[in-house]
Length: 124
Image (cartoon, rainbow, N blue to C red; front, side, top):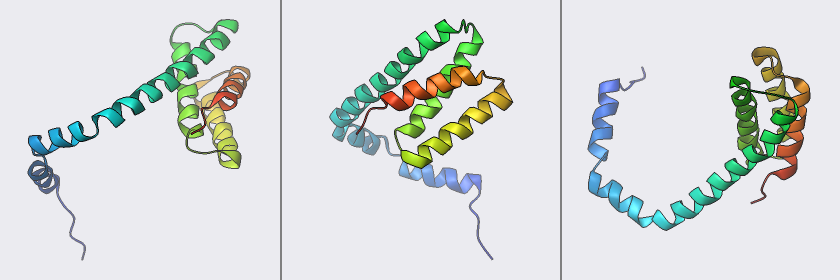
C-alpha cells in the first residue's frame, strides 16, 4: 500500500531544507548568469509584444481584447522557444482553435500573430 505525504509532512520537509544562508549562497553563486538570462528573456518577451501591437492597432483591437491577443502571442512564443517543426505547427493550430472557440478571438488576427511570432523567434 503506498504511503502518501500529507501537506504538513511536505511543509516540514520544505522548512528543514530552507536555510536562508544556503539560499543566499546559491543566489550569489549564480547571480551573473541569472542576470544575463533575465536580460535576454525580458528583451525577447518585450520584442514579441512590440511586434504584435501594430497588428492589434491595424484591426482596431482595444481594451481587454488586447490582453487576449498578447496572451496568445506569449503562449505561442513560450512554445516556439522550445519546439519547432511539426510540433510547433500543431501547437499553434491547437492554441488558435482554443482562442477562437473559447475566447472568441478573430482567426485572421491570430494567423497574423502566428506569422510574426514564428517568423521572428530567436534561435538559441
